[in-house]
Structure formats: structure tokens, C-alpha cells
Picture 1 (cartoon, rainbow, N blue to C red):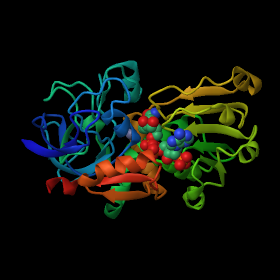
Picture 2: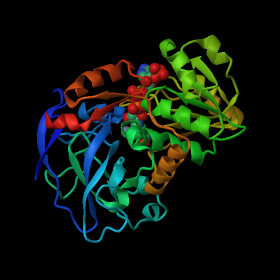
Picture 3: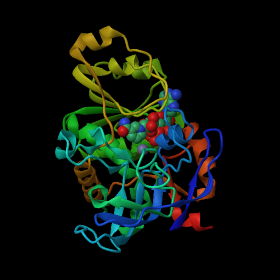
Length: 349
Ligand code: NAP
Ligand code: ZN
């Protein structure tokens, strides 16, 4: 069945209305009517072919929430009408060490929600800027938030898990000082989650205009990262830093904010590399630099349940499909507090 979607045929073309098809519902599949889909900066990197390997036509979107419209005969965990989510993963090998440890995000055969090859037409996955999606039940998440929060839950499916996973892995919590760099889609959710985990949160931003709003998110301190005097106040103070910035930048001022054995985790994925940090900033104080990619399915469910229990959702600006191109332009200027979410009912127009 043909459904409506929004996507692009080339990196230098704006996104436009498209028709796509979804596979027939298989025995283990869940068919979802998509209500809302968040706009992640990864959508921009991919649609704009900033990373290698964009397959066109490209329909981005991996922060999906909606209702179950149909289930296959062997689906036991979901029923028609359930409120569900789909994040960045729609398949994996299901049998490797990573999958068996609930780390499908690190499976060599992980299939992303868009831009990954698949046997289904047209040969690659198409994401959540669309009316419907069909996903194996293993990769479908349960949403326990209130129904009226649904649009603001959508960004948790990527921004939420991408910050929750490293915060948990490196044990952010009571008695820890945690820095979040870049207060955009990922960063603003990261501030909320780190605060809810009990950490002392230091937000690093380039946007003076966001200062007061960032405090409202739960940050204990807000530091303008381009101001050396403000950066100096953080020297050797932090246990953990999560860097969400989507552009290459100097890592040294942040590394020097770490105390002994402190850890900096890169989750931002700029298309060109950061300048290599100065070795002594790692050597002195035995600091570490890591990366982290989204999170596994079980941990994504844990994150959604944690956020429901702590009443955490994203701060969003709801847009129609025909406003996606404008939204992309504003994201590039860091001009959104903090996540655009597409109202997928607008695709019908
Ligand atoms: P976003 O909403 O655009 O937020 C990025 C923030 O970084 C901006 O709001 C801005 O915050 C700051 N920033 C932007 N340009 C900067 C610059 N030149 N120098 C310093 N700071 C700058 O993007 P997002 O959706 O949060 O995604 C962030 C990155 O994470 C993207 O590269 C995305 O592809 C990547 N990502 C990775 C994973 C993963 O699994 N690792 C998952 C999802 C996304 P301020 O205004 O506060 O400075
Ligand atoms: Zn994303």
C-alpha cells in the first residue's frame, strides 16, 4: 500500500512530499500509524549527504511515536491501539554477542530506521517522516507517558537514549559533576536526565540567549564555552562530560575541565573530525576520551520508563511536514528550544 512521506531525492534538493510503500505485515511485525516524529541533527547530516553513503530517495526520521494499527500472527507483546515508539534501530542479526547482551546498537548487522539496506522496497530503509512504518516487534518500545505528552516523548527515542546510555554507563548520579556540551536536541534532554539521576549538572553552551532557559531544564551551572574566563571556573572539576556538538571544535578546553580519571564521551558526530586534542590534556590527570552510539532496545525501554517516572519529555516546537525545510535551516543556526517534532497528520494534506 502506498503511503505519504516527506523526503529528498538529492543532497542539494529540499525535502518534498513523496509516496512510499511499506512491506506487508509479517508474523513478527508491528504496523504503526505514526503520530509524531522528531527531527534529529542526524537527519540533516544524512539528507544533506554530509556523512558518506546516503541512499536516495532519503526519508529521514528515527524518533517515532504512534499507535499500533496491525500485528502479525506471532506478535505477543503488542496489540492494536497500543501507544508505541520506534527509535534508530529496526533490525539486527539477533544472535551475536552484542544482540545477546541487549546491545543491538553495536551489532555489525544493525539496520537503522532509515538509510540502511533492506530486502524491502526500495532496497533501503525509509524513516519516520511518513504515515506508517512496519517493524519487527523486538525493536518496538512501550510508551507509558500520558497521551497528551506524546509529541514531546518522540525525541526521547534518539536524543533520550543517546544521552541516557553514556550517563548510565559512566555512572552519572549523586555526588558526580556532569558536563553537557551543546544544548540542542540531545543536550537539553541530557541535562534533564543527568539532573534526574542526581548529578550536579554543568551545561556548556555557545548561546548566551539560552542561559536562563537552560537553568530551567535542571542545569546547576551554565557556562558560555567560548568565554575563557567562564571556562576557567570549571578547571579540573568534572567527573564526566557528554559532548553533543554537531560541528568540529576544540576538545581541549573541555578535557581540562575533567578531574583525575575523568571521562569525556563524544556523541556528536560531525561530518569532519574534531582537531586532535593535546596529548598532555589526556596524560595529565589520566583522563579518557570515549564515544557512544544510541543504546540497545532494553536500555531504550529502561530510559523511556525512567523518563515517564520522572515526568521527563523534550521541549519541542511542533511543525507541519511542509515546515521541515525551514526547521532544518533553523537547526543549523541553533535556533530552536530544543527539538522540532513533525505532526505526521500533516502528511495527509
Ligand atoms: P542540535 O539540536 O543541532 O544540537 C547541537 C548543539 O550543539 C547546538 O544546539 C548548539 O548548542 C551546539 N553547537 C552547534 N554548532 C556548534 C559549534 N560550531 N560549536 C559549538 N557548539 C555548537 O543537534 P542534535 O540533534 O542534538 O545532534 C547533535 C549531534 O549528535 C549530531 O552530530 C548528531 O548526528 C549526533 N547524534 C549522535 C548520536 C549517537 O548515537 N552518537 C545519536 C543522535 C545524534 P548551543 O547553542 O548550546 O551551543
Ligand atoms: Zn538521532
